[in-house]
Image 1 (cartoon, one colour):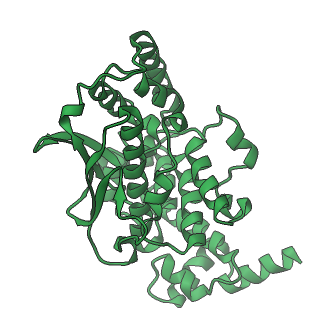
Image 2 (cartoon, rainbow, N blue to C red):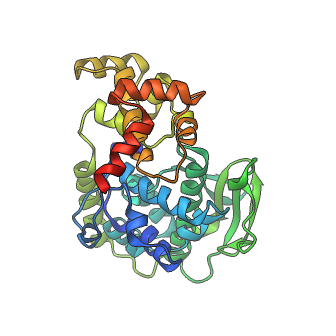
Image 3 (spheres, helix red, strand yellow):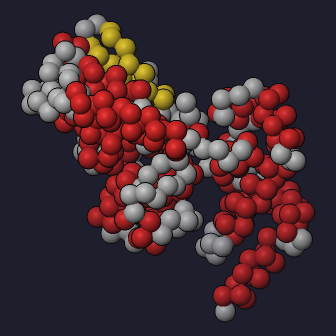
Length: 345
């Protein structure tokens, strides 16, 4: 299952928004370009796309200046109550192990963007996370957030006495991979910043540990309702809409190829092309439309140089970008920006 395949509730966006507001950022700036109105976040039945949540995360990263460890900080704000029915099902489980199995069975309801797998190794129960295939800084934030949120859930569900034994984040180059000075431990375990992947682990002897709020009737009810919610949130907008979301979430200089996109959308390249053709379009056309839309959005920011916009969209030089934009819009990027300014005045 892929996070693109499912809608999601507003609770996760609320956590990100509250984190940003606590640091002095405005609500309008945090929700910019997400098409999420403040009143939507007060409606538990409101459904939003993965792309809308990614927009809010991108805004937070930009406003905060992309500091290392930001995802870990945000992730610690998640509690089982954040996850509604899915979280309630965990605390109603008979044991820690049953809660883990239930969590993975209905993982689309967890707001996770990472792929999560469980395994036992050297006496530890490990949760291994594979980051989403998005822009590096965004991907790092999301896997950090998912890992920290999972850590909070494990400790909250397990109760007093359970501590993490291992917390690892993949090492690498760039600012996003630097250690966060104020975050040396998570859940009782030292944070290792130069690991081979992303994982957390606790003593596997905790798996049969009984939970104080165990309720088999409530757990069974949660299973039934979670299965219905997963089905309700399954996206049925068609291949074109799914491809549009993926392309809109990835910058031009790291936009996936058709083959990579097929993998992200859980299909083969041939099938992807055939489905797009059946919907009256092609990957090339959808990609061009995504670039045009992103270009128009970026040009609305008068402080962003057009040369920088060309770079962000993956063009080798300003001339190539200008020619492409003229094909899309019928006028140059500079003329389009002047047109926007005149409309505002």
